[in-house]
Image 1 (cartoon, helix red, strand yellow):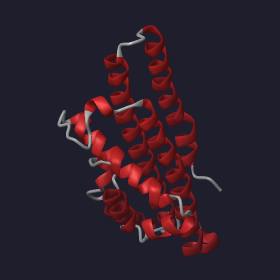
Image 2: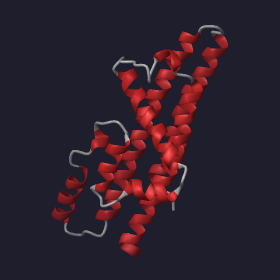
Image 3: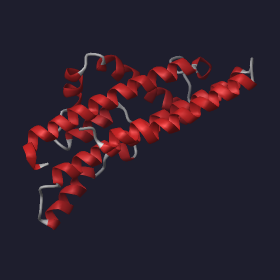
Length: 189
């Protein structure tokens, strides 16, 4: 069964990303030869993609924590555990980079990256694309471009490749986390 987090990623979050891609198309048609205009939208698209993927990861983490806490009936214990699961959660403030994602899910006992790599061989490439997206996100947000993240080099095709990677990772995360929770609790969750 797919999580509410994945459904939101595939519908609401995807619709937001589709809208910025449509804006790119509209500006590209109206401003032929003005690469700077579409470059600004490419930068906005990369930022939005990073933030939407971060939101998906955070939502999935919260959903998994809720599932783990469902069998706990003692109210004070449940509240204490809920606080502990989200205490200093890196996805609340940091980029959705592999380290932050892995660290947050490890707090729930989920060895996410090992399971994600075992789930789909394409996830190694997707992981590299996610790392590149996060590097670009930081370069754009801090206006600190480098040879690897040259503002002029950002193109729609690159952002689309990152989006494809995020889509694949989201599906794998959903499957891996769902399987982990089902194996851990059996029919109790």
